[in-house]
Every structure is written in C-alpha cells, then in structure tokens.
Length: 288
Image (cartoon, rainbow, N blue to C red; front, side, top):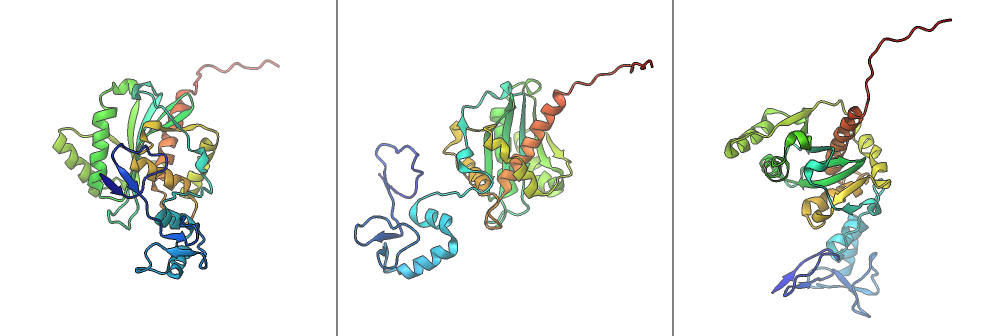
C-alpha cells in the first residue's frame, strides 16, 4: 500500500504503508529539500512545468514563513507570541468522576462555510489546581455537526457517571443561545430521545483579547495539561494551533482559545466559591 501525503514527524508509521513526501523545491547541487527563504541561484522547483522558482518564492513571501513551511515543506511551525509552543504539556487524564468539576464549553460561530470562524467545544476538568483539556472539537462546520459531537460526548464520557458525583455542567455563551442554535440541539435530542442540559453563560465578558491573554500564565506555570490520548486528534491539534497562534492578527482564528478561556473561567470560579468559607455570627462589641 502507498499513501502520498503529510504526517507529523512524531506520528508512528504503520507497517505496510509507505509515506511519500514531495517538497516544493530542492537544492540543485545536493538534491536536498530547499530551506526557506528560497535562493534563486541554488534552488529549483520540484515541478518546473507547473511553476518557476521565482513564482514560488513570491508566493511564499506573501504567505509568510510559517504557512509556507507547512504548505510546501511539511513543517508545522507555530510561532507563539503569547502562548509558547513549549508550554503545551501532555499527560494522562483522570476518570471524569475524579475531577473536582468538569465543564463542556461551546463557542459557536454564525455560519458554517469554509471561510467562517470555527465552532469550538472544550471539555475540561479541574483537579487540585490543575486544568485538564480532556476533549476538543474545533471545526469549520454547521451547527448540526457540533451538536452531534456534543451529544456523542454526553453519551460516552459524561452521562455514564453519576452527574452529582462528577459535578459536570455544559455552557454556551448566552449571546449565542438563539432559536437557530437551539433548534439544532433540540432536533438532535429528538432523534436520540433526550435533551442535553446546556446552561447560558451570562457573564458580561470583557475584551476577548485581554481575556485570552490573561490565562497564558496557567500554561507557563504548568497548570494546563492536554489529554495524551488525543495527541493525534485533528480537533485537538487545530485547537492547539489556534492557541499557540493567538495574537498573530486577523489571519489566525481564535475560537478554540476563546472556548478554553470560557471553560477555565467556569472551572476556577466554581472552585473559588466552593473553597470560600462563609461565617455568620454576632459581632462582638469592643470595650474601651
């Protein structure tokens, strides 16, 4: 068997499958893949009948180094400005009922075409101040696909445990809970014979960029752990790329880090209130 395409360098190769990678340009003296920025004197195109080295260089200069490396040289480079790539930590997650609190947070977008924002859902848990990113949905798709995914997670990893023990809630930003979105979830629920309980997040949210940037120290200080079993999951990879790419301008989507911020706010706010001791009594009068 033969597959022609890209795989991550850490992805294990399956026996009997041959992976072939074609690079956009090569060094004409040693036949090695060219290294951007391209050199017009030493680099030659892999498909000279289709494009020239000058045309390729012009296109890569327009795209930027990060996207060019990914598109033409199979190198997935993310240049983190606020969230550093080395801050992404993987680890084993706990059974759902072991967490102090679990949240599924949904950040929808209004349209489902390929140029639209992503629909992002994050399932995260907190245990002893550590935040675990358990599952993630991050796709340019219609609301129906997102609804099906969330129902699937409810049936497989959320509902089977005692919800009182697991202490789990589902949230969606209240500004997005409108009839069009609710109809999709109701329709999916009718197919399955039950409705998942989604709560509106009524928080008066401050500036999105400020909110997302404010949680970066959690990554830097090793308080956020990603599910090690999800390393090769495309949704998780896309969500991490959006997080590490946050702050690089309009060309980067930020729906995943926005959903993560919403989940973290709910998790930490719940724990803050849970550990706040309220004392009632009569204040003693001072004697002077």
